[in-house]
Image (cartoon, rainbow over all chains, first blue to last red; front, side):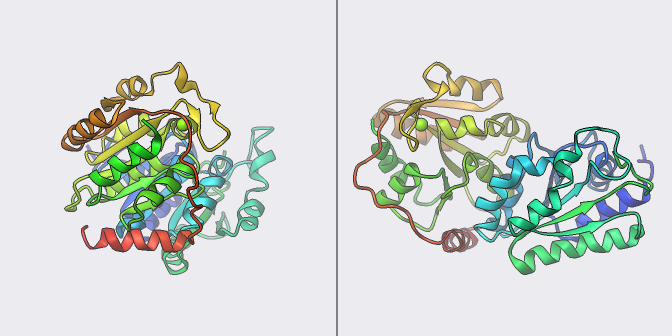
Length: 183
Length: 190
Ligand SMILES: [Mg+2]
């Protein structure tokens, strides 16, 4: 069975994650990143949300522990999630990944902005860039104003940036008005 | 059996294995028993020892590292119980979690945890972990050897008495130094 081609932006994010040098990728599901997960799994020869190097996790906090540990063994991990999960992850990100200077690439789709339908989710999502900045985590943002090739390049380079700075780095992906799903 | 007695036995049994240790009193007491580069002390990352050990066990799956040991407490495991279903799902063969269960939050005034009425070993078994049990020095030595020989994920559920060892110095090292020391130790083996 051949997988259908992913949407261009999701496919670009997936290729960017592999090109970022991720050895293992954990994810916490979101409708917006589901096509990214599908593309990652398909590229790794897996099916139904899992492959040898891609797997689901139940909560963002554990994702930071599981994938964040890889540099201690000479590897590099990535997490794919939705931005409202940063509320679940901040203590782990600060007291483990950041405090121990462990590089990690986190790619999160955003909620609560343009294209949103949920009347409450902006109460957290709107503040995510400010919160991450406040705790010293570097973020790079992507939206409709650049094309899939730019998304691919930014995600891949964000992985290099995480290793260069020995810190977790976050890419916030706004899928609204791309060929993906904003909310 | 007090926690520090259990840690003396575990330190003896894990000199050649990477060990991820939960924060506060457990890390301090293990460092007081034996401060070695194979120990990764999580100074403040609450509940994360099992998740970090899971990631390490996946990372060394094909390396000549026999097991990755997590030393976790009952309160800490209850803070991030996802460790159990995630381990059951991912099945890291090299993951060995030692649960030192005193049924209290030993680092926060000995307030009781659910573990007084909840069998965390049984929860782990329901999640698909192999479970071994111990409640005194003799059974701990034997059960650790068994757990080490078994394919993971394995939970070694150790019942210990509440209370922290007196006069144990605080662990004040820079986490970056602790992490680097551990990484360098592991790099010589992995
Ligand atoms: Mg306890």
